Length: 146
Image (cartoon, rainbow, N blue to C red; front, side, top):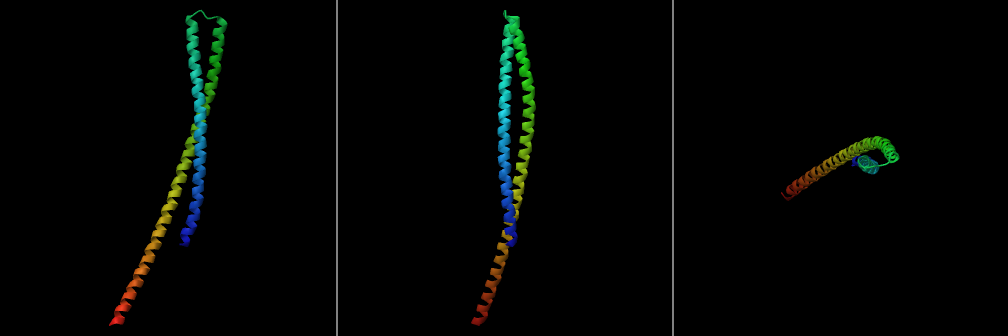
């Protein structure tokens, strides 16, 4: 059982690592969702700006307003490009954290299986000793009654 005590301590450490990995993964998912939502909102603004621009071209919109609209759309394009880069980074980070969590989960399961196997072996040993002892007692009782 001394071996399982050591393994149990290692399992506790692995469990803490797994919990830390879960927290880190959850934070990375939240960050990804936040940046992706921001990108989505900018894309909606860009779509609305393009619709307004198209409408302005078909109607009699003042030239300055058209230029302002174009400048606004260019600004949105730059922000969108930056956000796409941030979304990509956040996605990569999230995937890395997910892999780390998966690895931690596998490590935890390994130690759980090893501990269960060792405990099962110990129970089997105890059962064999008990069976042997009971057999010996039965033999002694049988011989003493003769």
